Amino acid sequence: MLQLQVNLLICICYVWFTFSYDLQTLKDDISTVDIKKLLKYRGPILKRMWFNDSHIVHGGNHEKSLCHSLFEDVLKTKNVSWPPPTTPPRELLDMYTMRKAQLVDWYFAQKYNGGVGYVWDKNIVKHHILSPNICGGYYVDTCALTMVKYQHYIDGKVCLVIGSESPWAEAALLNLKAKHVITIEYMEIKTDYPKLTTYHPSAVAELNIKNLWEPVDLIFSYSSLEHDGLG
Image (cartoon, rainbow, N blue to C red; front, side):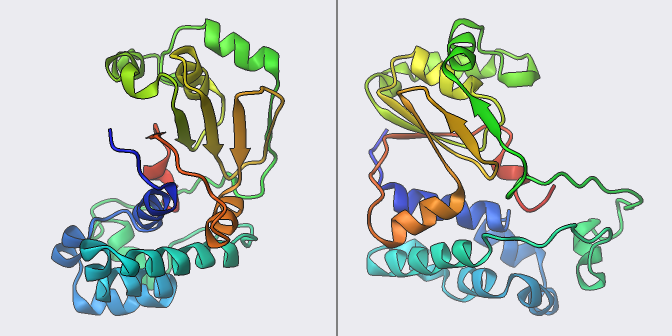
């Protein structure tokens, strides 16, 4: 696996989890009228994705400029309003319900950004290292099989985990001899494990803007990116 500058890769991930369509699907599935409605809510980010997608395709300085502005958007939304609305905006209702194919009669609000965080002390991390890798609470062997298959990319490398409530993924990577593991999570995480570092997304954005973020070798995420902003 190629070593990638994490400022670019996190930027791509941010584009992905800020609006969970790839560009071609977005253009195929959403009409121009819908785009105008969406710009009201996702203005700066979606507008850049829609009108400047060549910046992502062609690379170079365009990518850096786009990522820089996206990271600035992250900092602007560091403190989100709470509670969230109980119903989707009328302009977005058709898309949110897949053209009314799915009725919305309930909602679930769980605060992650700025919510009560976690403590991952040494004993908790060691417990997960000694436990079977069953993809957290999903009780499947997919994660273990995948990590073992690509162990040669993990051994001695700096790995990044995006989204994490308990350190099962971090422990699995450490168990396969990762040099260091970094976790990005909206909840505040405190840990004293020497090979584990955690950041809030806003901290990552700030480090990238200041060109202080160091590259990583591998990024792992499970049941996280696809939920961001969507519930």
